Amino acid sequence: MTNRVDLNAYLERIDYRGPRTAGLSLLAELQRRHIATIPFENLSPFLGLEVALSPPGLERKLIHQHRGGYCYEHNLLFKNILEQLGFQVSGLGARVLWEQPYTARPAVSHMLLRVTLDEVDYLVDTGFGALTPTAPLRLDRVGPQETAHEPYRVLHLNDHFLLEAYAGNGWKTLYRFDLRELWQADYEMASWYLSHHPRSHFVTNLVACRADADGRRNLNNQRLSIYPPGGERQRRMLSSVAEVLAVLEQEIGLRLPDHPALERRVADLLAAGAG
Image (tube, rainbow, N blue to C red):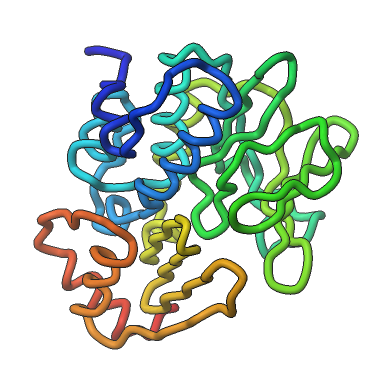
């Protein structure tokens, strides 16, 4: 079994044909194209399918099948690609604090990357769903950092960091992390829990997101939210299975899996009024 994802196939998937010299400009361009092309989505755990985190599994699903995935899939794939291109990169873990108080003590359930360029560390994350940062963020900078979408900031608190995004009317904390490197086994265990536990958000809900030059498109069950650049949020409630599947294909850009339970699972969500 190979440990290397097909680099050329990946670059074709994100439509990148430029220079391959490791540096900040290449890192930023790959991150932007990755997030614009490969959606965040949880169809595999939603349908009871296994989430493969091996390089062949990531390549097959996110590149050749034109699917997406959640944080472990996105960031493990991106880490593999960056390493092939000569970047110094390590995998980290975070405690998600979105819509929770700072005093909350959730488990480490999110993956992000630390990329070092010219002795400067950057936070790189291609898999935080609705608020995935669309540009590398310097870890040594305290103030706001602009991206093509929202501003972000990294707060330094003793032995750890907080990532915040300016969402809505103020700064919102996304997650808490430190610089301790995690291993593949750590991600495998956390991913298994998130994709199998009966109360996991990724098992009980349908989530899909993509961010490109036209803004963000976030699907949460039957609620579609669109955030155009500099414009007001547009929200639409979907009322049929056909509408949900059309959004996944046309707005999110997914090639849907041929699974007999897909329509039934979406119908169950609509009947329950989830979202």
